[in-house]
Image 1 (tube, rainbow, N blue to C red):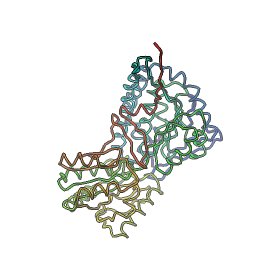
Image 2 (cartoon, rainbow, N blue to C red):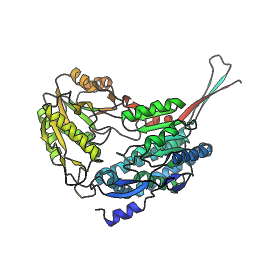
Image 3 (spheres, rainbow, N blue to C red):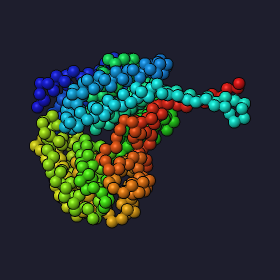
Image 4 (cartoon, helix red, strand yellow):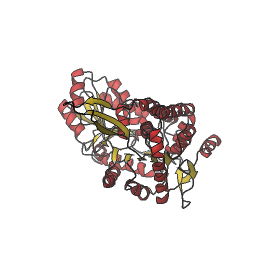
Length: 487
């Protein structure tokens, strides 16, 4: 049961649609139940937007675009800076809200608040560094000027697993660049985004610049916006099948598109690796966010000379984790997001067992209520098991072996996905060789976390295109205009 302080926090969050600077109900009065995945209980209900509500949100963004683009970069940056400071000051509330609606332990949620807020600080500094160039044509007859201008109204569709950071990673550069937006958070975890919209209004974001619509009728409400000629950009974080459908829809208006899609991250442990360091990295790469992350290590490929030691130590660490409601002291593993997610993880583990995998620890759903699954390590997993082909999105680590560097790289690249890979080795030459050979947008060397607001986040192949964060992140929201001037 939610405590009184938890109920007070939930009651403080607006539950309507945020359109044109105003909170309003859905046009048909429908609502969505928001569930606590640790208990299955309903926390609250939020407005369930209709097609008309989506259009109204885009109307507001379009109306605000010209004035926001003309707002001095320093002013846009100062709003973001104030928002960074405000989120930091309210870190405990944001962390608790995420834990209640998504399930992750409070320590994880606090980490996300720090990470998510940093995108606002980073892009507050980038707002004043948008610039073009000036040059003389080779024949001397023309002066060449390039300028950067905001792309324009943007549709942002964010996932449930990082309710704050996936929003700030998109909103930050858009505000800095001078773009207005319509944000559609996941229906499972809308409260954090609604609280963020309220905070951004307090920090000075003008009416219509940021609009937030919550809906479980996602396809019906989003498709008309994507096909609307007034929309100029679409950014989505989520599954690859949904991303492909959105890209198809976006082609009608030739939208600028950035897609951060699924992953199937390999975690390579070479024979010369520091095994203890590799185990520490594995815990981070696998168990961050309960394994519900596109960057989560999905396949552990370990050299045959160290696989026994790595597997034993890794299983020992996983066995010591504590499963429970994320608000409770000492809990390190919260629930999965819903029963569908837990059923999929169970199915993947059972299929691997049938193919000969050995369970070293865990292996089953657990708990009388909520959607919990035991931290699990599986050894001797055949590479044709679904665990090695599909994104697990849960606390399950399948281990297989390799004997040569070429075999490791081939197995790592044997996937349609290409978001992130991890490699542990003490050889500098291997670091260079492996980093160049891995077909992934990001590579972590001797570390289990690669995400950083100052670095470009994104993948290749079926993991999408475009980059978020870093110097590259703001370019996704800027167009280049060339002006030729006769002297």
